[in-house]
Amino acid sequence: MNSASDLLAALGRYTRFCLSATRAVPFLNVREMLHQAYVMGVGSLVVLLAVGAFSGAMLTVQGFASLRAFGTSELLGMFIALGGVREVFPLIGAGCVGAKVGSAVASEVATLKIGQQIDALEVMAVDPMRFLVAPRLVACIVVTPLLVGACLLAGLVSSYLIATLQLGVDQGVFVSRLLENISLRDLVSALVKALGFGMLTGTLACWHGYAADAGAASVGQASNRTVVQAMVTGGVLNLFVSNVFYGGLL
Amino acid sequence: MYKRQCLIKSAVFGAVLSSVACFEGYTAHRSAEGVGRASNRSVVSAILSILVANYVLNSLLYVGVVVPG
Image (tube, rainbow over all chains, first blue to last red; front, top):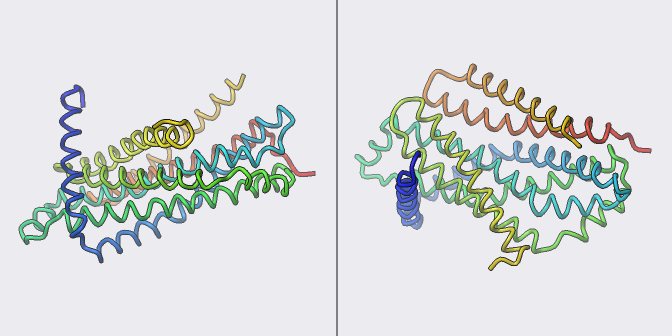
């Protein structure tokens, strides 16, 4: 994409792809959708738990180091609630779902495309939108909030363990500061972010997989582009949702 | 103020990233599917190993691994 008109043309192709995928959603193959959701969810759960645990650990250590300089390390629970639950866990969790699920779906669809198996589906009068794209899209939208929730829980548990066992913060103070600063609004904003991320990841992955032309290199290219664009657009979406929920936008 | 920590962290992340990506590419299967799987695995393991390295480096560089008590 080296000029503005290329960018606009790609946006138009993406929008048309999204529209035809949405039109296929009411007719999707339910068994394929459940299978995809199972594969995505079970295949990514361990990775998401590990990502949540380690991002919680790094946030806790960094928050402790910053707060200790002001002699207020008992506020660590509040730091985790405000920084972790509102931003870091949803963003890193959803980014990791985008990387894991998005690149897997993109390379799968691209492999089917360059093996001319999508053409074979069309020859057999099976609509690839209903059979391939819509099930993956819906599965991605359903699975992303669940995985982000798992990531959030793992992050909270690991920041509790790091704060009490490694850093020696009082556990009662940590837990009460943590719980009194988590509200329903935080969880709703995390849910909205996860749903939006799921939509972006699913549509981008299927679109790039569908656009693969020929050769093994285009498979890698499709999965690479999916990850990069899902991360960038996801970051913009995160900023927007945070502004709506906390910054008084709209 | 934290220039040295910033440089150390980014240099370690660069080393982790490139070695993980080269390893996954080198051990990929000989098919178009293998290419896709290698790129998927390298993204996931790079994210994970960077988070692990970030936690370890944060502990070492900023806190000095505090032991309770």
